[in-house]
Length: 285
Image 1 (cartoon, helix red, strand yellow):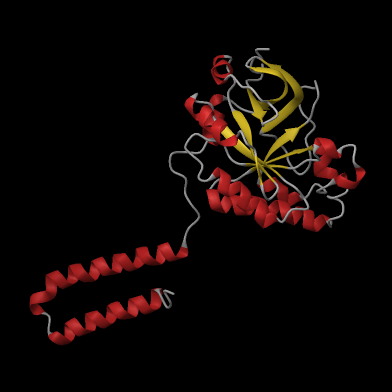
Image 2 (tube, rainbow, N blue to C red):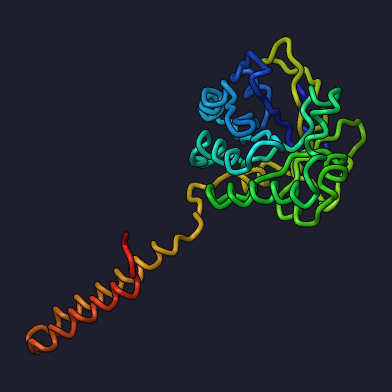
């Protein structure tokens, strides 16, 4: 099926994992798929075995690509953050923001015990886990994540927590309606997964998740990682920068004033440098 872009101008895209065993990347590109999301990690230890190779294939074929982490509520959040960051590394220019995938896994839907894992955790702690993952990944990569979830999940599991609106929404809502059912606290959606059973030329014998992007190609380009990503400010790097400016200034002054400087003036300059090091770097251990 060669799905066309939406009459509203929305852009079509796919999300893939190892469940889609064969992918003809050239065919996807030729058929006009505009972006791909790849499963990167799950829980604290699992890495999708197709992730690294498919990331490279998307890059080679000029397909904007994002990466998602499937969250496990019983897994330590710090290990899940570490798992995702170690596998993704630095985001490259043209890639899409990282995604936190929040859902009840397919096998859980008929397993009350496993589904209850989310509900065994206090609501405030569920929300905190999501916020902690998003904040840590944003701090490490310099790009705000996107949250993937259904409207039902937002209400039933996370209580429509207002803090979640800090991040863009990728909503899962399988419907033929002209718009998805939007969960609180969001007033708009960025991506919409509207089908989990699509058929796509280039991906034989597998159901594929189909998505819309709520914008134009120009909007998608603004969402992609630019050539320069501003990293969170490093206080020690800032201190070293200020110190280097001071050193340059003192050296320049010394070159100009050296003929007129006495031994005491030289001693004073040396003491000033020593004081700067003491102020900026009280301990280098």
